Amino acid sequence: MFYRLVVLMVALTFIAPFVLSAQQNLVQTETKGSDAVLLIGDYQGIDETDAQSAALLVALELRKQGISVGDPVYEADTSASVYRISFRRLGGKILVHLTQETPIGTIIIERQLWITSIEEIIEAAPRVVEALVHKKSIGSTVDIESVVEDDAPVLRKISGESLWSIGLFGTSVPGTNLNGELGFEAGLSYQMPTYAVETEFRMTGGESGNDSFVFGTWSIGGRYFFSKRNISPYVGGGLALSGVNYETRIEREYDRFWGGSYYDSKSEGDTGTGIYVIGGIEMLRLSRNRLTLELRVDRTLFRLPTQDVMPITLGIFFSSNYILGDFGLF
Image 1: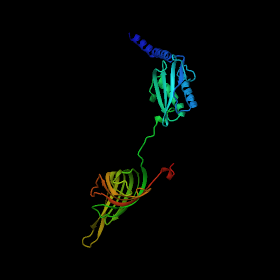
Image 2: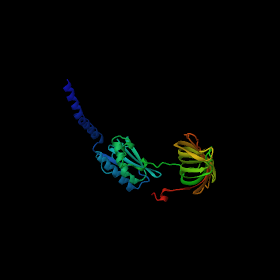
Image 3: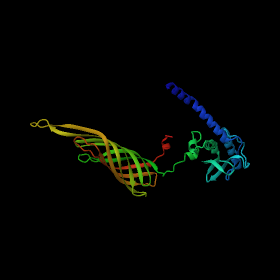
Image 4: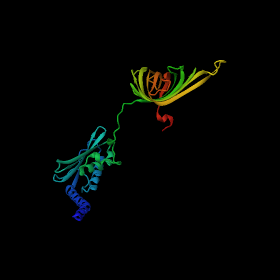
């Protein structure tokens, strides 16, 4: 019994595909017929020579599918098995419409494809014929060599502008002697009339009295502009990756009788994430170059052992539209 099952499985595995293939070929032969006619239908808005050439390409594709069809004609007997190719223009696009009719005027199956110029029939003809003969959707017939413009439309987007920026700012750190320490910023942003997204790199540091610190951050965030005019206030905020190092010097006595002292320094630092908020005024928004006054508060989400560093900065920044080609990148 086991051997019989093995023989049966082998027979089904190797013989069944040939049987199915033969049945499919028989069905296709019966369906396609041997004396089909390709009619040239409507082609308003298309040059007659172009319509004839396009129809000839469709005839060639039908022959590749095993359908015996002559060169395209304008008339046929009412009893003939007919394929009809039509072209209809809508603005700058052309609808390629292929039907199978038996008898003439009774549509059995149809397929259509939009093209942007009659020259695209070179890519469209194989697809529309394959879709009709094998009863496929047009979308399933596309491959890397047959993409037409309608398959890859250009997305319509609200345009904005890209800007680079540089600036200087003063930094104060509450709870320390640090006040007005100089820092710099470099960044990129993409702006629309009322919104913007931005990324910046900032570095600041200094020494005052017994305190010194270094603070660097890379941030990503956004802004909201309250006006579309040449001068507009704005607010915003975002996330940041920050690193801070804080050092303080403590004066200690080394001899109480004779006097004298020395300084003992204590350094601590850490890196981590943070958030920031901003508020400011952007000027010259209607021109290519901008000038910005901005107040910013950075809040790290980590804390040093003895000091909570929360820089507050006030700065002035210059920004300008940029195009990648202007820097020689392309």
